[in-house]
Length: 243
Image (cartoon, rainbow, N blue to C red; front, side):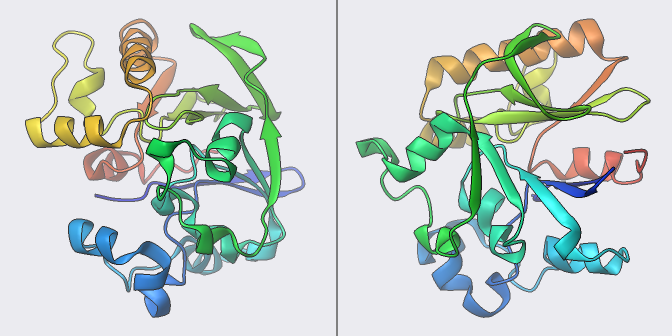
């Protein structure tokens, strides 16, 4: 599995979509991710963090002005600490889940990853329509926050207009490409079991997967959909640099 991030060049700096697990995993892995996550998931703790890859591309990480997160799970928001000056965009419901968790959300988010006090920008689920999705927020020109609740109650997708079609980072709204197959939806049983365990809003998750299938069926020539952790999707898209 991968942590699929996007780096966007914008008119006034850089925008990062997702941050991955962050640079502290190399020296503070157990504290940063938790012993249980490490035992169950077996993450590669010496992998190059997003901040390192940004430097290798020749950019200054301080030029990352905005960060858009699909949600606040540890493998999506762990790298916020590497960009302390950035404005962090999430849906307000996701921020509430972190700040005032329900009983089934306690322990989900790693407080240590937010101890640096990120500069939150919380967005209400209000806005326009986009390819059948409602309440879509424009965060910057050609960069949209899409409601995709289910995996978490404030889960989002991030859509980017590349000038040659849209990219939709669908986060953890699905884990296997077969789930958005509009003809024969399918998912490996163990992965499907994991999705059920990790979800907080079952019906919303299933409804949004249906919307994603409709999107792929009706607009595959206009929108490329991918998830956060599927390696095959990542390798298929990694050479795209039109954003």
